[in-house]
Image (cartoon, rainbow, N blue to C red; front, side, top):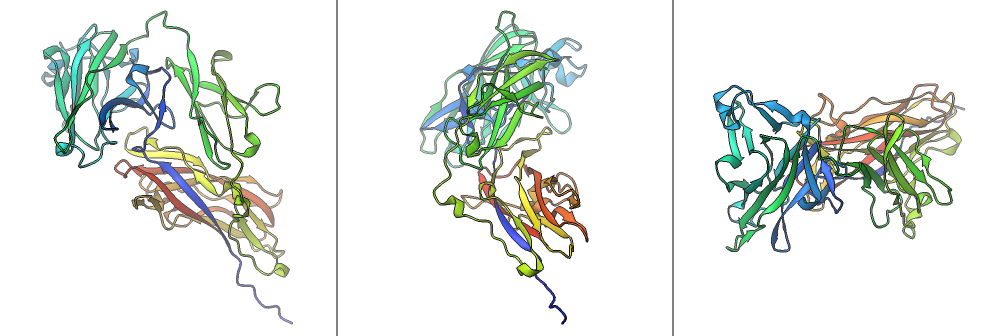
Length: 489
């Protein structure tokens, strides 16, 4: 007798993506003192909280970003910032052509600090004219200070300048994020006094008063203490199983060394053990109950010599919510007599939380990266027809206030974690986020995670992918959630 054909050969698993909180969302507040010398920072970060106007520092040199009190920050203009005044009449305000200056440029240089000012946390309709005023009200230091930007034709526009009288005032609209060139005419230590003023829609005037910002131009003063290393990013509270944890090593003062080693000490262990392959400034992993009570440290090396080590930080992971183990991935299988093709996600891995987005090196997009977490494909069909596993965020991402963006802004780089010795599973191609590499459209359309060709695929394989979110800088602030549908057929 002819056996009936089997038409259904696909299964589907759903995975919730609690994607990165975009840049406007409030970063964690940090209280440690730091020296910032490389990377992006909103040095003059304007906030309106509890009826008061405040100036803070948004530090994007760590991930996730943190907000700091200006009193806790020393901004260092490294010796590499030294240049000379161009021999152009338009730049005569900087001094004599050829004379030395130390400049943090308007366009990011990865080897220098990139400070700017920021009003993106301020809401529309709160202040008269939807603007605040930033003023440089004082400079105490060995030289002059000038902030200027240039237009598309290269013509300079002075924002603040200390040698022709202060205060200098600049009206800044809300929702503004801007950068300029910061120029210092001599090395040494400076105190810049910034002030923010605004008028509420009801006519009430607000002012921060002068707020001190410390800048050191050139090498830090000797006798300032040894290099300190600390860890940021660990929550003081409990993580939920499946939460993403990202730890960041922070040098103070920040220097040129970049060789790290992360160590962990699990409950019951006698000492810290190195974490294989974790030698960068950040370390990301997934919280599980098995890691509850673990400790983590990081060390900084110059060659083989340890030059700094951090204090330990502790990880606390809550028990899974009662009944959470009943939340299963949705699967469908064909008749058992014909075998089955099943794609599934462990209940503890059903949610992916990307870290807070940070500016890309080019400063033109907000980006975040993370791991998909294991996806299992099991094929028990004796006929070995092969299979393809794919994923798509068809409905895009949505925030609590209804703002959306397309799933195409999320991309992945697939990988195979484990498979049978003769299973023949091959990782799918890189799918880049829309707008980063044309003509890629990210996960807005169906993207292949892995394939097994005809005659292959029998057994169980574990798949994974490195996720990359990349959205335009005008994307509205918020925490966005989407559903990644995984399909095997």
